[in-house]
Image 1: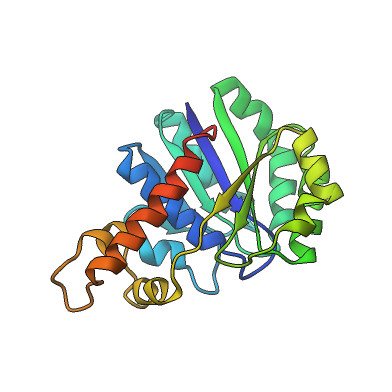
Image 2: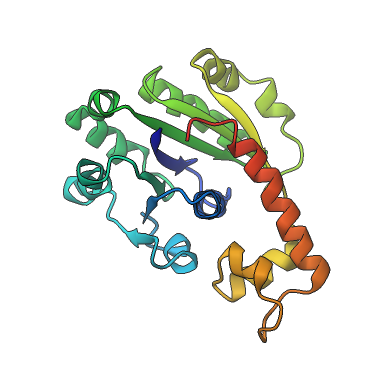
Length: 230
């Protein structure tokens, strides 16, 4: 199965780009072809960390968004990762509706996955409900409790938003927290997670236990990804 994965959350700072980067590394480590797109013009971190796999795209242009799906016509076995900037749901939903994207992808046999990445705040939970209201039961929903941006998701678990999401088949996964120092070192060098794990001698290499923590973190995330329609 191929898939198109919209990594969103509507809110800034919840870890959308980190989730996109982990998914990209997952596809690389599983030898699964994919193309990435970065819609965040403020920092473009997905493009920086996975140069050669991801490129920028303008989300408020139909022509720009069309480039995300055009590649499926020539390479239907690839998957796509779209790192969505904050507050992109409105232009994205217009494009999807006017392009009949769900029907096109159903005919092609490609899974359409909407990832909603959350911190433990009220607004992230409320925005999940808005996402479900926008697309109903057409896509797959993946609700990501990001423990790198929160520790207590009780508000989400007792919410009407999550009840609505699970009623529409949503899967809930946890994105584990990576030790802050290790993440800062990786981000400071604009490096992929693969390099962070395998670079032992470079001037900015992580230490032995730091590399092991990154490996364990990725393995935990990958185990959750293995359960998803990717």
